[in-house]
Image (cartoon, rainbow, N blue to C red; front, side, top):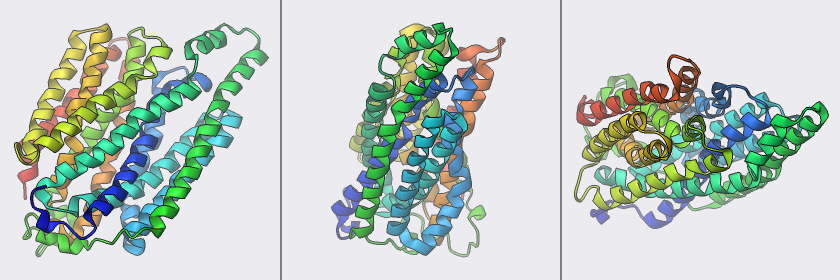
Length: 425
C-alpha cells in the first residue's frame, strides 16, 4: 500500500485484530473437509450427497443470516457485532457435544448451521471493515493479507482435527464394515463419534475468550457513509436502493460461484479422491494441500497487486487458470487429477480479495447492506457441492464429469465479471 496518507490512526493494530478474526474464520470453516469423511463414517451415511450436507448446513446459514446481520450491525456497531458473532459460533461448537453423544447427524448439522450464523455476522462486519481501512485500489492486497491468516489456519485445522478424530481411520473403517455383532459395531461408532467432543469444547472456550478480547479492545468504528470518498464517489449519490448497483448484484453472483468452486476444491477433494481409490488415511490431509496452494496465491497477490497488476486483471487470469485446471482433472486420473484439484486453490486465492472490493466500490451508505448481499453469495458453498454429489451418484455421469459440470460454469462467470461485470454502473 503505497498511499500511507490514507491510512487511519492505529492502522497496524486494527489490521492485527481483523487478522486474528480471519484466522478464526479459516480454522472453523476448513474443519468441514475433515468432518465430511468423519461424519459419513461415524453416522453410517450411505451416499456422498448425504455427507456433503455438512457444507450445505454450514454455508446456507450465510444466505439466511447475512441481511439480518447487517441490521444487527447497525444496532451494535462493528466491534460488538464481531464479539457477538464469536459467541454464536461458540454455541454452535457446544451443540457438537450432545450430537456426538447421541451420534445424531441432524444435530451435527444444526451445530454447523449455528456456527455459520456466527460467521455470517463476523464476515458481514469484517470484510467491509478491511476493504474501507485504506485505499480501494489496494483493498485486494489487504484482503489477501487477511487471506493468509485465514488459509494458514485452514491448513492447520484439518491437520489437527484429522490427527484427533481420524487417527487410524482406515483400520477403524475396516473394523466397522466387518463387524457382524450390532452391539460391537455400535460401540465402535460411538467411540469414534466421541472423538469430536474435546476439540469442539476447547474451540468453544477459545471463541468466548476471543469475544471478550474483541469487546474490550480499542478497535474503532468506521463510518461507512464516509466510504463515498473512496473509489467512484458519485455512484451512491441520488440512489435509494442496493438494487440500483448492477456491479454489486453481479458481484454477489460471482461470490456465489467462487465460494462454490472454493468449497469443491477444498472440501470436495476428499470425496473426489475417494472415488479415485485413495484410502481414508491419505485423503484426510488433502484439504490442507488445496489451502497450501491458496496460500501461495495470496502471497503472489500481495507482491503483485496493485504495483504490477490490477486486482481485476489478476482475477481474470485466475479464472482462466481455474478453467484449465478443471479440464485437466477430467483428462487425467489418480494423483495427477488430485494435484489439479489442489492447484485450484492457487486459482481461487485472489477471487474473494478481488471480487469483494470491486463489488462494494462506491456504495457509500449502502456498504453494510451491500456487504450483506455479497455474504449471501456464500450460499454457493452450500448448493454447488450438493449438485456435484447428486450428479456423481448417477451412473451416466460419475465423479469426473460431475466435477466438470459443477466447476466450469463457475470459472466462466467469474471470468465474465473480471472482464465486464464489475464495470456495469
